[in-house]
Image 1 (cartoon, rainbow, N blue to C red):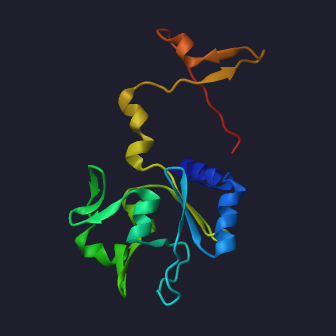
Image 2 (image 1 turned 90 degrees about the vertical axis):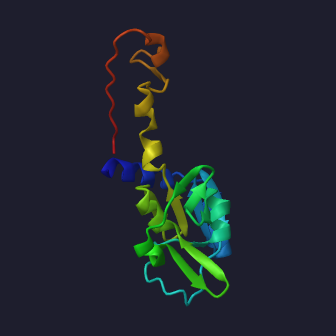
Image 3 (image 1 turned 90 degrees about the horizontal axis):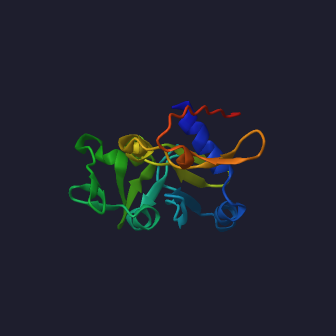
Length: 173
């Protein structure tokens, strides 16, 4: 699990400067979901959330940033639907006047989706959901890649199809 969070923080640190500058200049917040950056409205100052790392978005911003919409059966995107636990509904939804706010941070926890927050820049990054993280395992096919050997010669995994291959990986972090 620590590797996922390190990956998420690494991805957040590599964001283009203009995305974070957008949040700082406008006083608004930026959500990065499915690798797309979307500026979202901040809740009113009297909203009542003590944790600045909790991301509440309007239902309109939820749809723009994630393509998820609130339906009677839950939070849905195309045919994919996640029911909101009835006992925890107030953790996900809050009515403020005529606006309904949705807790995207809590939703990510429900889906076991890694998330990272940069308080200084007001940027939230949401990684792939757990079902997406392991989708390659279902196919049992490693993604193709090309890397140089010690002499600089390029080798592609697909060039070894039908042969036994031992892959060793290493990361400096």
